[in-house]
Image (cartoon, rainbow, N blue to C red; front, side, top):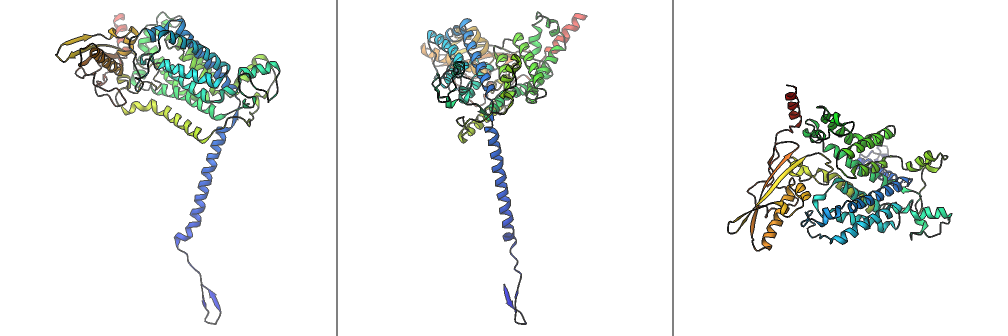
Length: 522
């Protein structure tokens, strides 16, 4: 503003702006810079997710996965497991929320497993991949959800890998139709593949997103398997390995080693350190090859020592995702002695290749969050998860407990008459062994006993369980409150107050072994 000068000339007077007004431009600039930085960070992250990588790793994983599941289904047919696990039982334990799921008749179940053998081969070859992959996944998940008593961690892992592969561009790379065209010398990009897929859809690269997602999945298995061993039974009392190794005195070469007092503790710590750190060593280029050699040795030893099915095979194949994407081509060149090829050069993005929409990224993040939360849900229940089993499944608690139980039911009708009911009346020996140490299955069978009595005109009845269990060599202790009517309890997601607390005493196997050795010396 101006005012007249005493000598008649105008003079400019300084104007002081409020502090808030003076700071607005700076705050605006800071906000814009922050927003620009965040946008640039998001753009960089998206660029890395979409960065093209060689598809060789995905081809190898698809082939291995399809062959493994095909062999697995074939084993069920060859060894008669279809009848033993699914046809012979008169009662099947159901997963929570899947009580409506029915069982196919025996002949159709055999036909389904035969179809799984074929579908596994089709997936391995990349034939009609979208159909074959999803049908293989649906059939496999169906048979694995027929009975909770057949739950195994590697079946769960196989289902997750099948889901990720079915969603991935694994059907656009290294398929049988591409190999056929190459053999026939067809080079035209306008030709139509024999699988019914246009050649334009055949990707020369895949987004790094899929490689990172599958690495995450494999890492989750190992890391949580290691965390599951972070307790006194495993690290201090060497249980349950102490029980298992003591029964392997006849094992070739290593049998006498297993009988040494220090062996169970040494093997327990080796297993914990392996599971907890193998992802780190596989992720570091300098240690990747020796780490994978250790991985193969570890899984080979566990596969011959313990009846854990195809889990070592699946993990050995899945762990290859930590190698560079082009490792199969490099390995082929090294074995055949051929010269350097495009395997060592960065993959080129194909204009027709798959993209990563925002909703796909959101689904992937939700999937990753679920994989992290499921193994941690046991924290919501408190207590010892190996005892009450709430949060045990789908959490990668591999070989962390030796749990034996015995159960009998006491049924009271409305006249006060009492019946003693053995689980063997309804279950196969395999089902009895699995059910007797798992509280939710004990309660589920109790409800079936209630319904059976009602169907025979003897209801309504009350069903009580005399259930005892031993965890990792401890003395037997009551597992379920004997005065609770299990016919009325719910086995949903809420904490089960009818399960008694775990025994506080430590696992005694090492102490007992030392006492026996001392007595033998005396």
